[in-house]
Image (cartoon, rainbow over all chains, first blue to last red):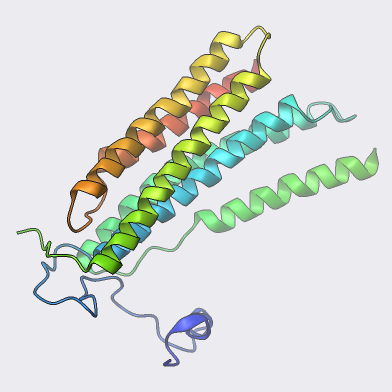
Length: 146
Length: 106
């Protein structure tokens, strides 16, 4: 395996040790395939991977929606007023944002692959991590104060 | 010219199959969420809203999944999903979120 591939290569690229590929997911030839491919259409493996990533984001959004509903309906009320509802609303709002962002991202990646441009950065990942950490931290504080 | 060729059965079959399974999981998750939402609010004042919520979440998801699975099975070489399929699923979830917000705030 070359140094530019695999997990080690990914870390090196993230750390700036290796240059990022300037062109990502362009129409490529499957190693075992033969014949010509229309360069306007990306390799089906990449477009299907993009679709599955979109579906994974949608399931994450659904899980947040379910979590928000469960937080409001199942979890006993905290002693601090409105905390439970606020957290539930935060989860549902994040779910809504993710649903919109996942479609936008699917569209952006499809366009980038067709044009042979670099893939856009996943901005939703840090947002998701931050909000989930904030919700979890708030719950922890409320439970400790109780 | 679409760039489609005779597929490599091993590679294409697995890729398409994994994507179909992802759509099935998505439809199942939507159905489960709809059932849970209806169950949680059963007997409450917002039963009608809960049923609407369940339908909004589940039905477009099922429709989009069926359409996409059918397309993947029909195409010899998989193509990108139609934007309306993806948009339908995302829009149904956005509507479900809006209804859930209404449930929570009310």
